[in-house]
Amino acid sequence: MPRVELTDRFVSGSKVGDYFDAKTVGLNLRVTPNGVRSWFLIFTSPGGKRARVTLGRYPQTPLSRARALAIEARGHLDEGKDPRERNLSYYKNGSNTEYGAIPESFFWRPQRTRLYFEVASFCLGLLSA
Image (cartoon, rainbow, N blue to C red; front, side, top):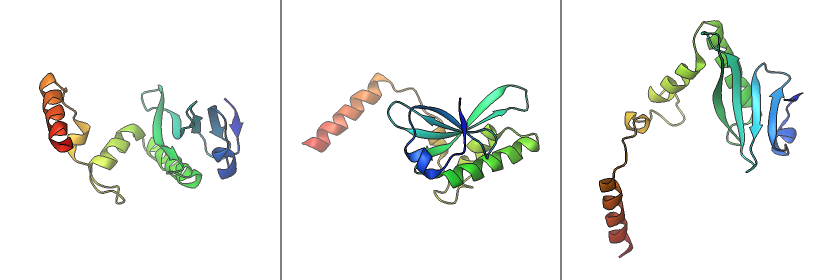
């Protein structure tokens, strides 16, 4: 996995693969074959295992924001906290002022049964009529 000094120009034109930032420890850019560019932080959890937390996708999350999020997550690690737990509570509690609180129902997804699909197809039939 190459360690390079990431720039906006490099990120926008990068090929498929994983790239680590030379400036920010653990910041990882993953480019998929479909061209999706995602930011991750690779770290050692307080339990001693290697772990990864998603920071966002490029270009919605620019390089400067990804670096800031990685530094913030490293701060949580220094306090002995797992940044993956903070990430979930951050969105549940509405600390994300850009979007507000995400309802609890988003995190709990019930099993979709046959009845669910029958009702959905019936509703779609009514809408298309």
